[in-house]
Length: 241
Image (tube, rainbow, N blue to C red; front, side, top):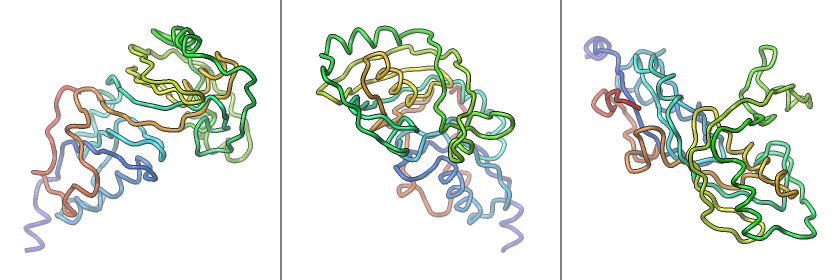
């Protein structure tokens, strides 16, 4: 029986995960790899993802299995949508709640009209500086590794696309937004830069990815909703992302 299991074709396809907080994107891949191996998949079966979600973020994570990992760049380039909350009364060295958070004194908090005006500068193609705590490589090392050592990585601004930016709600100090953006956009950087524009603090306190390309939350499952043993029939085929 064991030989029959080992002779099965290597699984290939997609899993659309609704990632929960505290898991890294690579944690999710490792868990799914273990479940695939329980069904007889090779020990070193390839499992990757198409766009990192930070541990504090939730939502759509596209996971590619086996030969599907060859298409990772196609899915990485897909549009993404988020709902997010920015706190204008605090700052952080990681631009979210995962770093060293400090209060920012704001004598005259901006009103809703001022927030709307500031948002206008972030629509379309903008230049964005990645966070210090990011996976960007500097001299062969990840920026977050340097940041943890207290080294300020010399990152450079790069162009990103913000296709839609909608103010969903504002009650000082919290700004609730919907964002539709292109590849490589850091929402943490956006939170930081919005605060700079308003002369306030600016950190991300909530982030949920609601869509990656053709995949939205209606198609996603949490790890708890997936079988503990994953087989080929549990995977989606490759489609236009």
